Length: 123
Image (cartoon, rainbow, N blue to C red; front, side, top):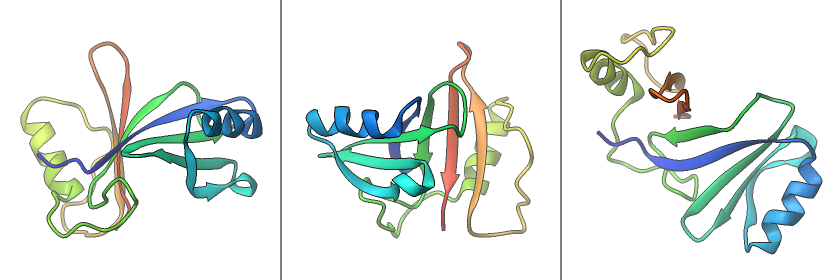
């Protein structure tokens, strides 16, 4: 199963302070914006999302159809196929994505230890 680009989405208290901290670790801004209350930051192939006031806790994120630069890739597994596979494995995927649709969609699953995984397809 191809889940796409991986990142960790961090819930931060102060976006400016977090940006400055991760810049000191060598990360640069790839997307988002201070005015949007989130930044996507990159250091080589590592991606992190900094989100202020959007959710509680930290989330692992996969983006089917994207590489680690947020660029479209040709060969990827659509989120609807991923949903069907996970359901077949007995994993609860939350609200059902209509299999007759195409394009952007998202779902969340939770691992046995309570870690949240967001699968977020943007195309």
